Length: 88
Image 1 (cartoon, rainbow, N blue to C red):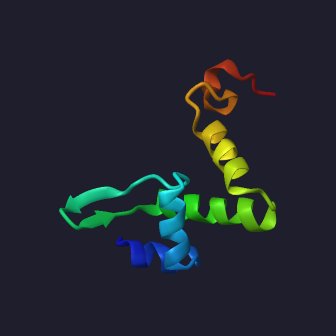
Image 2: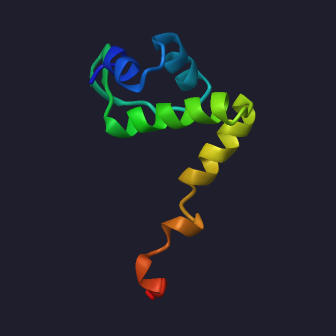
Image 3: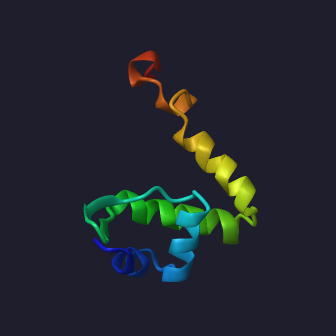
């Protein structure tokens, strides 16, 4: 989907989506042409998360960056293989 569709599907204004990209909160999509980028469902979810952290959570952009970095960290506890968890 193009960025305008990302904006529509996430319910977030296009200007805000572009701002999130400039601030490093939203990763780039996949470049499909020199002037065209495609976005997926993961981008829609990320935009909604960013919006929730900023508006509902009342976090600053800097704090939102920290939360997102923690969520994306390769060594985050929730990324460990499920085999190490016990089932009850």
